[in-house]
Length: 481
Image (cartoon, rainbow, N blue to C red):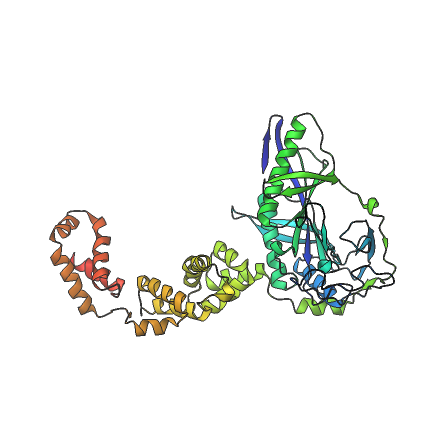
């Protein structure tokens, strides 16, 4: 994205920090439940509440999930990592510090390939992934004079994924967030629910004249909780900075907040630097040392990831890149498609899935997990069309009945007498009748008004209640017209 200013063209320089809550039964340094949705302050241990003398114990599942995510990001897994204390005082941090990783993170540099709307791809470099504990949740809208703290989230395991400043447009950042969410969901390491706060994004944004080297001061937009809002925040902030520069002022390093109601960013505080947090090694946790065997065991058990699945669907099922990208973005959709397409024409199944099926889910406000039409039944519907048992037009009606009843399409076709008529003599009688009843249109067709051809096909199908085999109809009309 190029910004057109009075002083010339400017480009956006953006990097992201994404906080992903780790899927595990308990928190990263305590045995308290990490499950979302409990009543306020019910999933809290003495460790989470910062009680004196309470010592953290590292949750091995959180380590495994972080390694798995690092491998999914095609990143270096560091066999040696350390924990540090990040010191700051705020009501949502009972200990007065956050246990995190600073100098030596568990995961090093990696890369994620994103798909852009113009059909191109771009590699986004990952700088690091480290694990840490989440803070509590501050609630500011329950009272006009007080803030409330819910400690349930405090101590939940987090993976902080930091990118290089490789984004040049809001669209690239949005594509990356969707891809990252897809990867962690395939891996089962984070549920990616941004509206529940289990995946949150900080965006660091600066701009510079096109052709200028180096980085200018940046603003960091904190805790954006949707892909759409992240894109809006980046676009607004870039335009705001352009106005500041072109008014003769300078950008200061600062932290800002995105207001979803107005689509604007607003000042929060001057940007902190690492030395403000007075990092020092966590004295209660030893260094984390991983063996080659441990890392390789996790690598061997990785599931098929979105890019690999997309390539397989394109190669073996005849899907276009667009179709495969849409279907593979969501693991549940990809699994549903693969079941439905087993033994059938993959492209035809994809057309039904991305057309009538998705429209039905949207209309009924359903997810694919509670769809009334099973994957197997969608595949059977396509098979009925492929084997000429029903026509495409009748299939639309059968689909709607399936959406209401959840019934097997074969049962619906049998019980309602919807099988396609393939008896040439029976169809020929209808064709003869339509031609005999419409002499004016026949004459017009024979005098060159060939667009009437579709009208004749429609009349024959109407008279047969949609059951006549369209191929036979066309062959007979070719012969008789």
